[in-house]
Amino acid sequence: MISAVHFKNFKALRSTAVRLEPFNLLIGPSGSGKTSLIEALLRLRYLAGQATAPGPTSALAFLNGPQIEFHFHPPFQNVRVTLGCQADELSCHRLRVDHPPGLAGAGQWAELRTQLQGIRAYLLDHQAMGAPGLRSAGTELAANASNLAAVLAQRAQQAPVAFAHLVTDFCRIMPEFSGFDFRGVGEGHVELRAALRDSPERLSCENLSQGTLYLLAILTLAHDPQPPTLVCLEEADRGVHPRLLREVRDALYRLSYPVATETPRPVVQVVATTHAPYLLDLFRDHPSEIVLAHKQGNAASFERLTDRPDVLELMRETNLGDLWYSGILGGIPGD
Amino acid sequence: MKLALLSESPADEAALSVLVGYVLGAPFTRVQPTLRARGWPSVEQVLPAILRHLHFNTEADGLIVVVDSDSSVVHTPQHEAPAYHHPGCRICRLRTVFRRTLKNLPLNTAHPTPANTAHPQVRRERVLRAVGLAVPAMEAWYLCGRDTSITEAAWTQGQAAGRVPYSRSELKWRVYGTERPTLPHEIKRAVQEVTRHQGDVRRLEHDFPQGFGSLARDLRSWRAESSC
Ligand SMILES: [Zn+2]
Image (cartoon, rainbow over all chains, first blue to last red; front, top):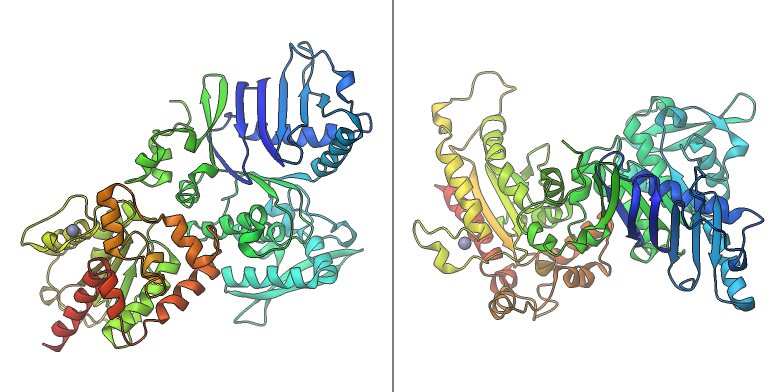
């Protein structure tokens, strides 16, 4: 959906751009703009969803303030959306849309606008996920996955095939488990419980490990029959054993490359962040999916790994994770 | 026999386990927990520690290591000359690590098994070595017999001419139907393909005489050793 984002004076992103692929893994130190990119995407969703989103005729004078310009993949390649504000304003809260003239152009913007409403960002919280959830709040996964139990209970009822795939995948990765069940608790609340393979015991979510819950949330997204249009996932590696990071990558690929897993649904663009060199190692065959976020003093910038001319040569004798850690690639904290 | 396998991914491991069984012609058990490395440089870096671990802490009779050659130099019969070592060849490099590490470990006869039954019952003096090289990647082995144009010779001739005949990603497409297979799909396809060689690995040895051939020769030398 989104092909590139250009930043001008947005927080530390003074003057930089990032090209977006179906799958994007951002690496870099704190304050290097990874979260700012996600914030910009969420702001785009919010402003594009406002009833009064203006067209090209209402171009706003925010040339001197921060600007974030979005470019799109076909069929929206002729639409351009800019977020900005005037120099004396604090945040990019205005939106300008440039689209081709006439009904066709307006139609394109209307369709794109609908798709932009499907942008979601997640920062998973295992403590919130462990608690029983209100059964009626399970339509879609919350930003911290706090309603995981309700989402899965609803999916088990409304999309049993997709739910079965999710359970099969989870139990393959975590062979100590054999499935899930749901238990009503309190007023309209539901609790998710995991069944152990070698024991009649059921483990309630709050007794599942952090990594188990994170993996379950990621699989819940990956097997969603009606997923978001763009998924941002912060700290995709969090809590996951290094040997299971391949499963995290595969689950996210399931979203962004549905054809690869014969999943009949549109591409979900993925923007994930990580601090794990071991996750980075798994992109040896697809280094173009890595985006380095550099921080120089107070300024930050993005660079696609394959825009470096020497990267393939560097990768001959060294893992990507080690290259990153060594500092050769950049995307490291200042000394 | 009790064996340990070290390769670059769980799918490689699954296929390798099948092939090792075919070459040895006898069942074997795997050392637990299984070993894993993160691609080429890690295999070489972690190998000394793995050898020490297998030697002192396990009943492993042998360690089988197979890595992808990627764009590195492919092993040749000339590399087999006594004391020869090609610094760009991964088989030569792995063999050197084996030799250097094992040389510095005491023979097991010098460390008799203690009465404590929890301690491994070690039968061999040293961990046996088997090293293979998938040229340029394991997927080439998986296509052996399906596509006669995919051979070690085709690859090395292409390397010499500065134009390799196929890429890793092309091989992946051919085997998995995608460049981004899930792990279960990758394992399933890898095992399906190598199972075609059940009972007869001559085709693999013919098409991949150095990378697979070296592995098979190492494994067969174990049979000779264990029958002494
Ligand atoms: Zn050699």
